[in-house]
Image 1 (tube, helix red, strand yellow):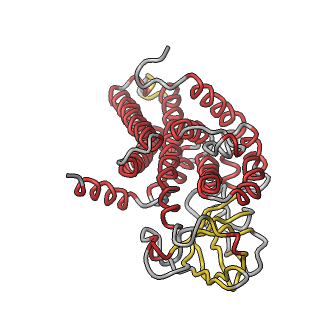
Image 2 (tube, one colour):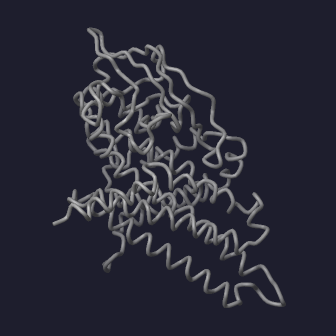
Length: 382
């Protein structure tokens, strides 16, 4: 029997499996992958065998058929081992879900079996050099002719680019604004598709980030996801879940940093006693725990809203993304401070978590945009 706010037993079992995978596979390798800029595709395929590549794809389509709350719990658990890998798995899951949710039977049959196993991996291409937060201003154009679409344009900051087998790409097929945007499924082998250099980044080094460049790239008409003009709606639907997932990754990274700090303060001695015995340390540890619990509560509530398709789900997803990613970064920074000079060293792992989590306040819509979404929902209320 569970009480209010407890996770269902099945969700706790999922959490346990994900935590075991994080502890046994991700954590022992995370720092090396970061240093070597290694993209651990084979290890992610092992995660896929546990159902973690298509968490909320329907079971009849080969997925795990889980809720958004289940997925958030899994991504948090995975991120305790490596936020970077957990975040990429979130992106792959989002693409698989969008194909399941909005694709045709033929598209589901073509792509989902290999995405579920991660035999093929997927990237999501929305952002451009001149349109980040203002996604509706994207310029990459797909011109229709008798044979399909011809694409020209550039996507920026695309995770997995150059390695991924599939690029769910938002393009302009019509006029200006959201109504002119469509979604296309672009295979890696498409002629005219190329990639920029692997970007050198502050964090997220265990996944490649490149430009995706289209120069007279041609795809068949069957590459269109849904109908023309529906792409922006698809993108926004995907981002609601993506914001929850990236918040969960921040939560998991912060939990890992708190564990490191807690262990360190118990062992480190100063002035004849463990620094965990000092009241200042205890207050800081307590605040970190309180803040993470508050963040988790908001995240789970937003997940419940999205699962229930509540009218205010988008606003709650934005609230959770803003609050949890800000809180996660702050808690990791506090953990580094508790370790003092050792926190600044790579050997302890906290500085990597801090670098990885910093981008979470930017991607899936900056936290400033999250505030705009929340404010607009408030002002629109009667």
